[in-house]
Every structure is written in structure tokens, then in C-alpha cells.
Length: 475
Image 1: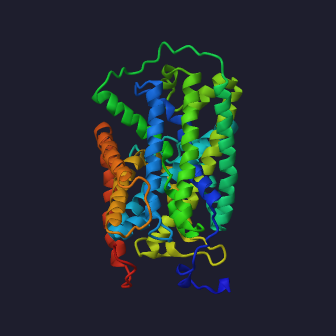
Image 2: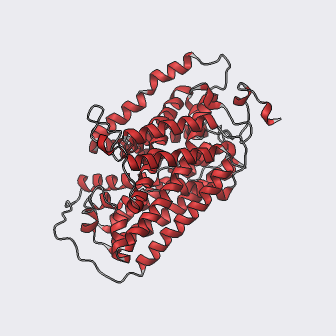
Image 3: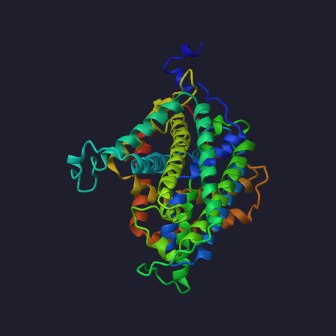
């Protein structure tokens, strides 16, 4: 009977609700815990903040993230459909704002994260296995002296294979992807706990690097800006906490389990991040961490101190496990946004097709795979992922404000923890973060805003082809 669906019917096939609370929690944690946990201590050390303020930056970023979970608990009661934040924005503000959010996810947020994580995974594997570069003779070929498609060809080819294979696994059932996520996430949590325990019992003392320099931060505006700069690094490591909302249509009892999954996953990540960075700074002085090069990984240097040369292998394997799990988690969640957009005629229509046997949005997964692979080849994903936090918090402000609007109108009847104080704190914090980012990184901020606005012509293109059927009005 399942095979009887024709191409038109495939957009009407429902997704399977097979993901439980434990898988949801590990999916949140698995999405969040990637390479950021091992790399972000270096740029944070370069801000000039002391150890206490750096730990405080991790804690405050975690608290803000948890506050976001409380806010989304109220929004989760609005719908049980897939799409998460996209769907919330659509219900509150209508198609245009929701489309711009989905466009950012497709263009840079989701696809860029998949590409970046797959590339870091491949780099870690290359450190151990040393891939050949079949196109090394063309490594200097460029498009506009900006895109070098053949550079690091061995690493890129392996990253492409990872994305393609994981996409194939996830087209064959969300439960398969969920099980793989649970196994890999459990493994990386265990690995990080091992590093933390080893570091807590470390009794050596490494001398500070006399040649390393760290900017002196006295007080006032400079300290304030440095603290928010450090939090920007921490928030990148926390990014992905709301991704579980994108698979709402495949979670059992989503109104209850989605908020619990976010809070549980954020709680796990926050605990691990604070303890791991405490260990980093306990084992190595801030000066040494600040001196870690752009192409080095701070956690690797810490592991060398803890374990000697084998520490390099241990961290490389742990980063491989962490990034592999994060790639898989991102491939599970992000294509569901494009699937929901296509259902609303705000994306390529075939992205709404569901596989008649495996009940997955397989065309949306394929679209995501293709664009992520293109970003890997071009090597532009680093630029795109650096823009995610800025653009993401612009939409975060809209989501929280929308929740407050609906709550005041009596549309949201469920209790929202800390309402209205916590939502107001989130909005104020987000405005400060966005403003500070615009001041500190004006070029990246402008590019991020331009990429958001680049969706406008595409919105009208899809709107032109939109069916007459009315699929819902803003609340």
C-alpha cells in the first residue's frame, strides 16, 4: 500500500512520530557538542579576561540559552508540526519573516554548519591517516582569488563522503539517524568526562609562555566589550540548542518533550563546557592558551600536557567522534525546515515529498546534502558560520517578542517559566549582543544582514508560484 503513493501524493505522506524524550535530549546535546568545545578557549583567552570571567562567560551564555528553552516551552504549545522556529515565526508574523529565517538556515546556518563540522571531522581524520591530495597540482587555482575549490582536496573529498553517507542513512528512517546519534553522543560525553577527570587530578604546573602577549583589560567599556566577545565564542559552542524544534513532527508528545529535551540537552552541554574549560585553564596558563595558533586546537595542546604525545591522538579521536555526531544531528534536523517551507509553498515544492517507505523528507535531505557539499568545495563555510550568531539572535529577538505578544493576547495558555522577566532579559541581552557584534565585527555583521536580505527576491519568486490554497493566517 505504501508503494502506491504517486509523486503528487508524496507531499501528503505524514512523518513518523518515533523519537522519544531520551533521543530528544541526546539530539540537543549531540547538535551542540561539536568542535567549539575544544577550540573556543583560545579566542576567549585572547580577550584579556581572567579565568573567572571566562568561566562566567560560559555560565552566562548557558543561562541565556536555558532561558531560551523556557521561552520555547510556551511556543511549543502552539503547534505539533515540524519546522520549529520557522513555524513559530510563521504563525506569529506570517510568511515573509518566517521565509527569511528559513532562507538563512538553508543558505548559511544549517548547510554551513553541516559543511564546517564535516570539514573539521575530516581534518581530524587527516591528522591521523594523512589523506592524499589528488588535485594538489590545482590547489592554487581560484575563482576571484577567493574560492580555492581544489585546495586540501583530500580533506574535502572525505568530508563530502561523510555528508553523502550520513544523508543516505537519514533518508532511510529518522529512527536510524536517532539511534546513531544516541550512540555517538554517549561516546563523546564519555570521552569529554574522561578529559575532565584526568585534568581535575592533574598535579603538574606548566610555566607561562613568556613570548605570548595578552591584551590588558582594565575596566569600563573595554572590559564589557571583551566579556561579550567571549560570550559570542561561548554562544557558538551552545548554538544548535533549538534545533530539536525542527523535528517536532517526529517527536512523541512534542508539547511536553520538546521543552524537556532542550532543557536536558542544554544542561548536559553547559555542565561539560564549564568543567572542560576549567580543566583547560587549570592545566595551561591563559597566556599559553592565547598563543595557540589559528590552525591549532587548544584542546590538543592541553592533552599533550596531560598525556604527552598520545594526547594528540586522544583529542583527535574525540574531536572526530564529536564532530561526526554533530554532523549527523544537523543532517537530521535542518532539512525538516526546508520540508516545512515547501509545504507552505515557500521553497522548492519537491522538498515537501516524503518517502513512501521510510517516511522521511528525502528530497529535502538531498537538497541540503547538495548545498552543504558545494560549501565544502568552495571553502566558504567558515565565513558563513561566523555570521550565524549575529543573524540568529536577530530572529531570536523576534521569536521571544512574538511569544510575549501571544501570551499577552491569551493565545498561549501554558505557563512560561519566569514570564515576563526572563523574556525581557533575553531581548535586552540579545540587543546588546547584536549591537556589540556590529561594533566589534562591522564587516561580518553587514555581510550577515545582506545574506538575510538576499532572500527577499526568492520569497517573491516562490510567492509567485504559490497555490491559491490558504494554509494559515498569522495569529
